[in-house]
Image 1 (tube, rainbow, N blue to C red):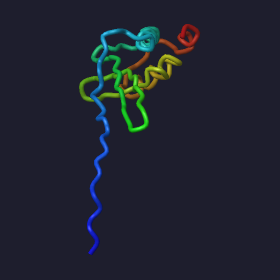
Image 2 (tube, one colour):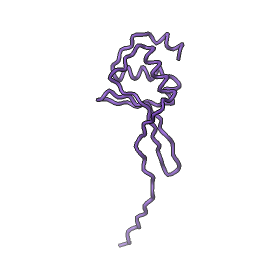
Image 3 (cartoon, rainbow, N blue to C red):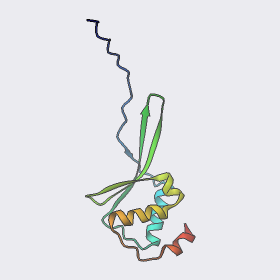
Amino acid sequence: MPAPAPVVHHPVAATPPPVQTADNPAGLRRLTETLNALGMSTSGLQVHYEEQPVYYPGGSYTNRDIVVSNGTKTERFSHDLTLRNPLITAAEIQRYFGIAATASPRGVIQNV
């Protein structure tokens, strides 16, 4: 019977937990402005920005997320995509958390 192959351990950096930052990035500000313009109440929601570095053997990248939670449900939205069009993220928050908008998005689109 042949000898078993030796086990080779390749060190891979572990992905650290997300870091909630204290600053208020542009995407989070634009989302807040859009939610307010739509008349969507964010009471009961916790909204914050997180960065999570992800490492793999060939390099790394950073996930930049806007995290929205109501205590029972949590959803992560891309900061970069929210910055491009916060109205889409607002619509997803409305759908996911069941928040009614009191203003039409037509007037908001011009200001985004």
